[in-house]
Length: 99
Length: 219
Image (cartoon, rainbow over all chains, first blue to last red):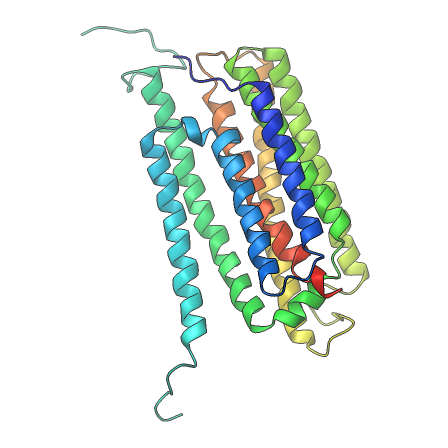
């Protein structure tokens, strides 16, 4: 049994990309983009996460089953964040009887 | 009944080495999914309180040293790079390179933890630790500011705890690699240990902008 072995060059490119993205997110944070500062910061973080997961964690060579499990994990994280936040956002929308 | 000789790469209960490897990798990923949910709760708490008190969170965040944070992110990325090279060394059967890269990974992890300890100490000196002596300049909302630092200590603290566990895993892998346990046919623990290490790296990839960068544009 021999798996796919990625080249050192591939890993080096990904590594340099991660360092550049770290520098980028640090510099962009000093520019006033209003509401979009947090959006840009999170988009860069997600790109970095994908680079680490797909290349360093070999997810792109993984079986469908593994990918489904990881996707399921992220889906549940999405449910946690979305439902949790929608609760806080919508609390003031309806009056509470007797209050 | 055919009797196959049991090896590390093929235990009795598995059909093929690939199936055994897949079982271990999948098991690790399922553990990591539980970790996603574990950290997810703290990220949700952060998101809720930041949405309620955005200005205090900005002020509090700006007291963190962004240069140290960015450099430490780089250090952690270096450790992930050496970790993936350690796994690759195991894949191609280079015991010497595996040992060197495992040691490098531990070193980078150690540097990260050392810098973190320095930062935490700074918080104690500056009275930025939640409690009776807490004081943050530039805002009357001391209670809300303590929320930020409570989340800061909880999230970076639990992250650092994972790093300490990771260094322990690296140490175990190092001893076993030194003893010659790993071959291109069997290096699953190195692979799975790598998954854990990279996961902890990903958590920091989100912690860095959320804790250090959210208020920088107000300067």
